Length: 153
Image 1 (cartoon, rainbow, N blue to C red):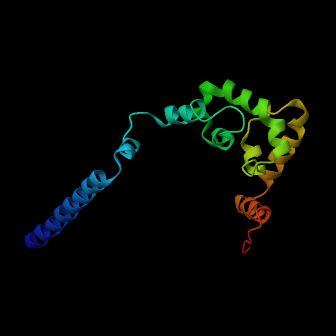
Image 2 (image 1 turned 135 degrees about the vertical axis):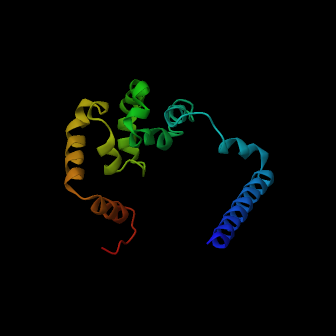
Image 3 (image 1 turned 30 degrees about the horizontal axis):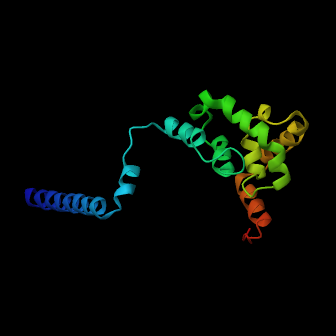
């Protein structure tokens, strides 16, 4: 029994050493400007808020990235809710006119109701209600149909 235990621990030690060596080589061979993306002391909340607040320009540029904040946990962006609301209210009609591909029923269903202009609130409520009635699989299939992709359901 002792011989089997030694063999197992030798295997575990060798695998661990190989992993450490591989990771060290990975860090040494990567481009130096990318190494900072692997290590951070920022929390998920800080990263979410920074991504929204320090993203690209205000009009048009970065709309998709900034609009994605509503799909994150609301606790992560609670402290900047006012800025998020201002952005959604300020750009809603432009987005409605341009119909960006990220502005799906699924996205609209995740936006808090008070972030829509008064004229659009009922339509958003209807979308939110219909999204709750459909299963998530049906929602995915519908979005794929809208994109022109065929789904085998």
